[in-house]
Image 1 (cartoon, rainbow, N blue to C red):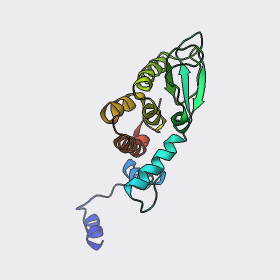
Image 2: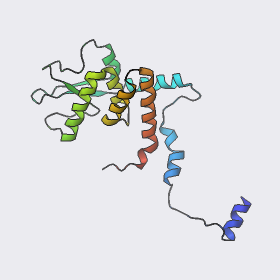
Image 3: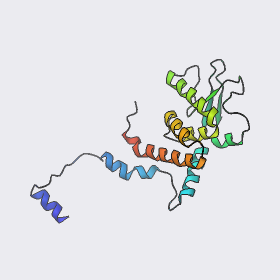
Amino acid sequence: AKDFWEDIVNKNKHLVLIKGPTRLFHTLIYADLSIPRAQNADEEVSLQLFRERIESKLLYLICLNKKCGYVEEITPAEAMRYSRNLSVCPICGSSRGISKIKFSILTAHEKQIRDLEETSRLLSQFGYKALLAMGTTGVSVKTAKRILKKFGYSEYLLMKALRKAYLNYIRTRHLWKIS
């Protein structure tokens, strides 16, 4: 510490003062506070806690038929107990998409409809695993599609990939500009 201050006084090093915390400070200090994990837990316990958190997340299955537009609230844990096909609307038989927010198909924006159509394909192909992927905070339709295509065959590897995507979201979310 003495050498550091001597360098500052002798003008060998410059001290730069800024107002407020830097992004690096925010990443190092605050990012870890928002990551849910058990202290001193092994990976299996940590994955199980992460899975339980995802399974309790409320999702919406929205019918893609504009004449029907039926919306069903469901959690992945409830979906596991169902024996019926979740990708088909129980009212009209059309396909359904997964959404994290509730909205009407009649008033949906073009991007929301595209995302619903994409999640509809994921739901028909992967079923319950697609609900897990879409229930993960910070995982978009594009990310869910990439992870499911790569790790959809193994639930253990899928959960590890989803947790990695979630931690990446937590680590980088303060850098994003939300418009």
